[in-house]
Structures are given as C-alpha cells and as structure tokens.
Length: 158
Image (cartoon, rainbow, N blue to C red; front, side):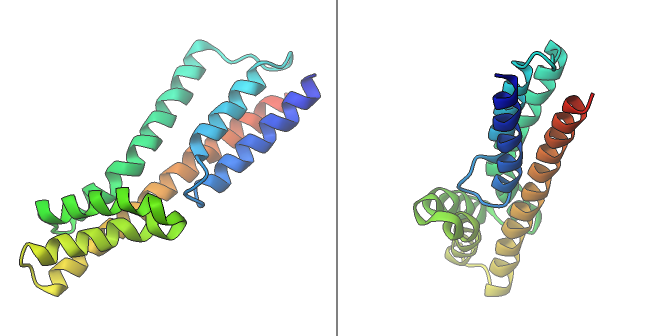
C-alpha cells in the first residue's frame, strides 16, 4: 500500500507544479493533497506544525491568485475603475479557459481605465500591472509547489 501512496503522492506534487503554469489545474492544493497522502505512509510522519505551514502556504497561494492582479493593477497607476475591471475580467475569464484567466484581468483593467476617462497609455499601464501581478503570482505558486516537491523527495529518500 505504501508504494501506491508514494506513487500517487509523487504524481500529485508534480501535477501541482504543472498546475502553477496551467491555470485550470489547482496546483498548490494538489501538491498539498500529495503531501497529505505521503503522511499516510508508514515511512513519513509530518508534525502538526508541518501541516499548519503547508495549509497556510496553500491558503496564501490561493488567495494571491485573486489578489495579485488587482494589487499590481493599482500599483501601476490603476484607479478603482481599473481594479474593478481587473476583478470583473478575472471572474469573466474563468468562462474562457486558460487564455481567459490570463487575459481577462488585463482586458478588464484596460477597459475599466478607459471607461473612467483615462488615456490609452495609462490604461495600458494598468493592464500591464495586472499582467505583472499574474506573473508574480505564478512565480510564487511555483516556489510553494517547489518547496512541496522538495519536502516530498527529502522525506522519501530518508
């Protein structure tokens, strides 16, 4: 049974890393489930502190999925209109798959800024901020999943 759990756990932590790049796959939560399965083997036992850390990192990564494009839109000069546009674009983007999730906040931020009367150059800057937020968040999720992969391999090689 342990071998099956090791294999499934390994698949989930690797699939979780892939999910950081492919927005449809819930990357960090999959990696967390992989570590949870690893815990149920006879060879690995995580402490409560480990699990609290894993869960907190997962919650932060999931929350930043929604917050980073909006926060960066604002940091790049976006107004409330751009932030709302980014938020609406993110929600609408879910219906259009991977490209919608990436492009929705950008298009939403640009549209919101244009509707508020800002110049096209300023609207594009806010849209670029949304894209930077997406990239920043993707990198953060990759670091969290990379940490989970390291934890996985560290524990199976001991």
